[in-house]
Image 1 (tube, rainbow, N blue to C red):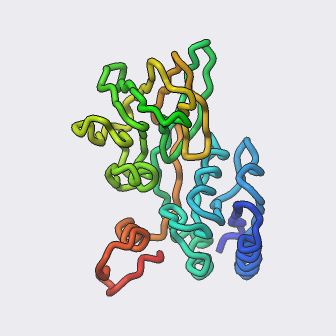
Image 2 (image 1 turned 120 degrees about the vertical axis):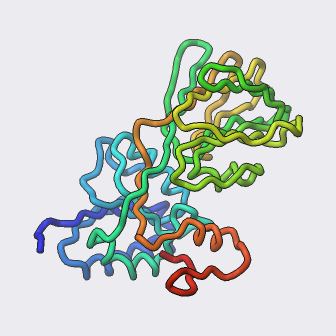
Length: 292
C-alpha cells in the first residue's frame, strides 16, 4: 500500500442551491475515502494560473463549466471528470450518483486518460495588435445585430478554399461537434479524432457543405467588409467584435484536453442517451444504460 495522497480539485459552477447540495454530498463521500486530499473552488475563475497540484479535477456543473475550467487551466491541463448538474452534458456525462458510486475507482486509478484536441485562436487586428485564446469546442464567426449575410473567406495552410455566403462559419473540434456544429447541421465526430470540421450556418449556396480536415492545418478566416456586429465567438463564452481588416487564425493548441474515463465508458452509449436515439443498447455484458 502507498501512503501517497490522491489529490482532488473540485470545481463548481455558480453557487446556486443545487450545486451547494451536490458539493455537500460529494464532500461526505470524499471524507470516507482514505488518503484523499481535496481543494475546493467555487468557480473556474478561482483556479490558479500556474497549475494545480491535483491528480484529478472534478467539475460539478455542465459542459460549459468544463469549457471554462480547461481554458482557465491553460498550459497546465490536468485529467478531468465532469459531473453533470446541467442539461445535455456530452463531456460532463456522469450523474452525481454515478460519480459517487465510482469514486473509489477514480481514487484507485482505475481510469484512463483520453487526450482531446484543443485549439488556439489568434485574432489579428488590422491595427497590428493580436490576442490569442485557448478553446476546446469551436471558433465561430457570426452575424451580429444587423442580421446581414456574411461573406467569410477561408484559407487552409494559406491556400484559399472558398468564400462562404452565410449567417456564420463554425470551425469545430471533434469535442465541439455535438455543440453548435451539430445544431448547424454539421457531422458528429468521434471525440478522440484529430481533425477540425468547417460548417457554414445557413449557407447561401447549397453546394457549400461541411468539410472535415486535418488537425495540423492552419485555418484563416477573414471578411472583407464585416457588417456591424459581426463577432468572433470562442466556445460560446469569449465574444470579440470583428472589424474590417481583422483575421482569425486557428491552429492546434500545444496542449490537449485530458478527460478521465472509466474502462467501460462508451461514446456511442453517451450519444444514445443524450440524443435520445431509439432502441436498446446491448453490450457483451448485457443491456447498458451508458452511465459509466
